[in-house]
Length: 276
Image 1 (cartoon, rainbow, N blue to C red):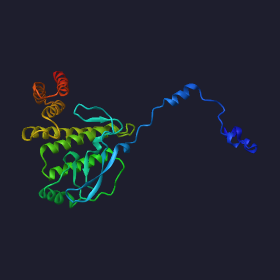
Image 2: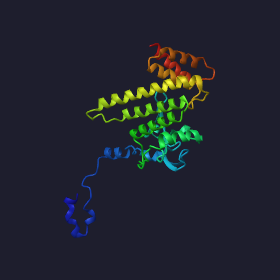
Image 3: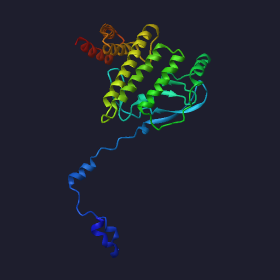
Image 4: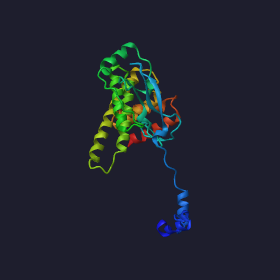
């Protein structure tokens, strides 16, 4: 409106120069009122938490998800949780930027001198100290951190369940990466196939590791009771067309007196899929 009323300043009415000529229609006003609030930024769900490295004893900060902040909206068939506005899987690894010690948060604890020495010798001595500290992690950041986590687990001779757990979570990271690829890029299809192939490779190693852990370790295994682990194994077995394994796991769940109603219902759904 300044071009229409720009001459009013000489009358002392310069404050009126920006007046609207026409009022907005009522429907537009109501649309503005009903506009959805802006989605919260990812940083709002995160906390920079202090840790002391059990290998080099340096204190460092790493990003973790605030407890109870994000809203769970569902899960994938292989139990990957889905939250609104954030993917917590990107923040599941605690990684020391000074020596390279990295571990899933579930397994962060003091280490024996023998294991600490193995990590120092095989990882820390060659590790390039990280100096980049982003405010959020991308899926690429998360994938690298999970790879470093897996290398630590192999070096420290972790249980099969821990190595399988890392592979399982890395597959989730890759799935999230695939879901957020830019579909307008010329090489989208090529990238998608590469990432999906990597995801399947990590899932297969998770499957093999959990099968081993099931017969050699005590429950809970990676935080799962027997029925939950068997459900996961049945899901992965169907994915890899090992239908005999899937059938055996499902039958065990349905016959178990300790399996809860929710996991039994999931097992029944798998059974119907298996029939097909």
